[in-house]
Length: 122
Image 1 (cartoon, one colour):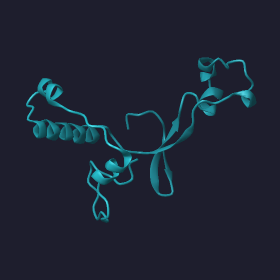
Image 2: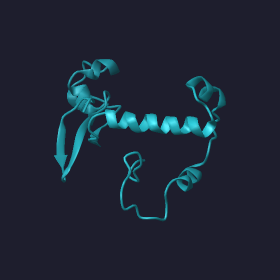
Image 3: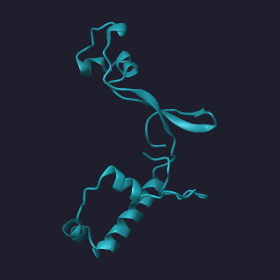
Image 4: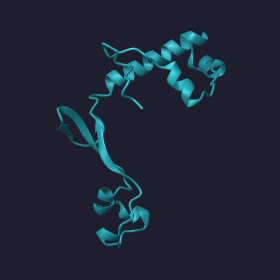
């Protein structure tokens, strides 16, 4: 709810319009000067962004709650009771796209989606 944009229904689902500042629509509505095209006719604008729609997720509170829960779990996994210790103990390991795919749920049909996990996320 906190993000800008109007909520609209599309095929029975709620979405918010997304318009990047370099999109044709945004440039036609005033951001063309950022891209040194303020004097260009609308049919001569060269967009550097897109317009689209994103699924409406509601208020940010539940999302932040899930993120904090994930952070607390990670702190427990590495034995870090404070953020300073997490920073000192954390190790990031780069994995391949195939490894990322394997580390997620696969070969099973989810019957109930969890609030912090969705197969539809990219």
